[in-house]
Image 1 (tube, rainbow over the protein chains, first blue to last red):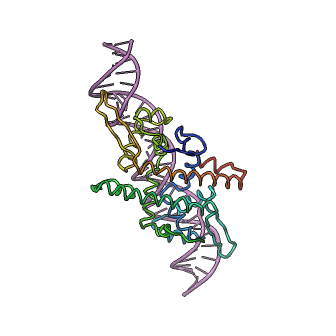
Image 2 (tube, rainbow over the protein chains, first blue to last red; image 1 turned 60 degrees about the horizontal axis):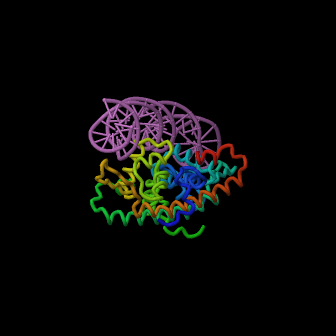
Image 3 (cartoon, chains in turn brown, yellow, blue, purple; image 1 turned 60 degrees about the vertical axis):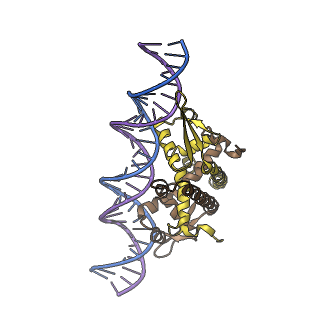
Length: 132
Length: 132
DNA sequence: TATAGCGCTATACTCTTGTATAGCGGTTAC
DNA sequence: GTAACCGCTATACAAGAGTATAGCGCTATA
């Protein structure tokens, strides 16, 4: 196997590289983070706009996830003292830079699908389940 | 904002690119997938070897996660008819190619940490929570 | 006055993940 | 025979993530 570079420390389940991967995972974790971030990649949005754009999300979850993303430095929340108040959510620099990560994930996902479906045409389970 | 290339379809929460990202997420999802894959990046391993290398994992979870990874084409399970039987787990091509994805995630995680800690030295919450 | 939109929060529940602990059938080592 | 290793599985429970539903204080509109 080729050189493992920075991932060498994954093995012992500690070390800063595993922490780093976990940070990334946690930022994208849960059912709603991806839709939210995806939606915000198009620019700032208000609460209700997000709620409308993301099918089936409840205000409770949207609120919770937005708070989470804010606390973790992925989005900023700006309140305008207009009447009535307007609240805008926008990706931070970190948030926007997730685009690169997501694109690599898209790439892997697509290739894996190709390889995987190629291998198993039975497909009763598997990919159907993965992306449920 | 710059061109969003393949991620454009993230917005509507459907389309093959979101599916692809979700595939990738699901493969890495849960508390134990990362340690397991990390461990297997070093080459094939037996059940007990994995159990020993991954602190605090229970055989129940190891078994479950390995099955999951196998079903999703990330690892192969090979049983040798030795006495007693030996079972070896090894990353598939897809599994090995996750290395690239993980490295991008490491990169993002590290940069985000730098940016984030730079911004907020209060740190009472936040990063400490992220990588808990 | 009543209705509707905004940006949420509260309460209660279910459903999924993960933990803890025990044990099975087989084999070798003492 | 009994203790220990291998590769698991079974059962029961706890904690967290997500859902369903309601409502709050505010303002603009009819």
